[in-house]
Amino acid sequence: MLSDKDKAYYAWQLNVPGFGVEGQEKLRNATALVSRVGGLGGPLAFSLAAAGFGKIILAHSGELREDDLNRQILMKHDGLGGARHEQAAETLRRFNPDVDVESVGENISEGNVVGLVEQADVVFSCAPLFEERLLMNREAVRQKKFLVDGAMFNMEGQVLAVKGGETACLACLVDEPPEHWQRRFPVIGALSAMMAQIAALEGIKMLTGLGESQVDKLIHVDALTMNMRKIKVRRNPHCKHCKV
Amino acid sequence: MKIIYQGQIGAVAGLTSEERDVSSDTTVAELIAEIAKGKPAEVARFLVDSEGNVSKSLLVVVDDDHVLDYSVRVGDARELLLMPPMAGG
Image (cartoon, rainbow over all chains, first blue to last red):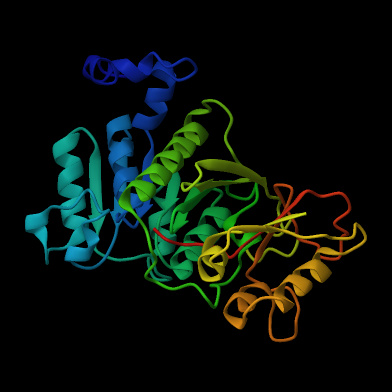
C-alpha cells in the first residue's frame, strides 16, 4: 500500500493512464542496479530516484576528474578527486530521501556481478566497456531479470530492453568485446542524458507493464538528424548467453 | 540501394550514407565485401575480417531488420545499415 506521503509526493505521475497507484507500488517495491553512474547512468539514476524506486544500487569505481564534468551530472565541481559513487549516492539521497540508495565503489566484475544482479529487479547497463556489459547481460539472462542496455558514440545512441531468457539479449547482437571499441569515446552530455531517459522509461515500463516494452528492438537515435529507428532484433540461436 | 554508415564507421569514413546500384540477387555478404573493397583500410576493418568475411562484431541491418544470416539475397531491400556495436556510457 502506498502511504499518504507517497500519494502526495508522486501525485503527478499517479495520474498517468495505465500507471497509477499500482504502478507506483511496483516501483516502490523494486530495486534497480545501475552500473556505472557517469554520463548515462547518472541522469538515469536521477530519474529512477524521482520516479520513486524503492532501492537503487550504484556501482562505480574511481575518483571524479575534471573531464567527467561535461556529462556526469550527479557529481559536484568541488568533488574533484573524490569517489564518484559516494557523490552520486549523496546527490540522490538529497534529492529523494525516501529512496534507499546503496553505493558500491567497484565496477562490475566476475567477482561481484552475481550478487549485485541477484539483488536487483532491473539492471541498467551503462558501463563504457563491453566486458562489464556482457557480464551483466549474462547474469540478467541466467537469473531471468530485466535489463536495459544503453550506449552511445558521437551523436548517436541506442537502447536495448531485455527480458532475461525471453527476448533478444545483448549477446545476441555482440557476444565478445569488439576489437575496435575504445574506452574513451566522443560524446556531448545532453546526448547521454537523452539516452538515459529512454533507458529509464523502458525499465519503468517493463516493471510496471505500462505501454509497450520495446523488447526485441534496438532503439537507435541519430541526434544529428533526430532520426529514431527501431531495429527489429531476434534471439540468436547461437547466442552464448540465451541460446534458444 | 542506400548504404548507411553509423557509429565508428561513419565517423572514420566521414560519410553517413551513399547510394549504390545493387543487383537483387546479391547476398548481404557479397555486398558488404564489395563495399569494403572500395574503402580505405581504416574503414574496411570494421566491415570484414582478414579473410574477407563479414566482421563478427558488425551489426548488419536491412530495412530496419537485424540480419544474422549473411547468405540471404538483398532482393528489393531499400537500405543496408552497417554499425559496429557501441558501449559509450
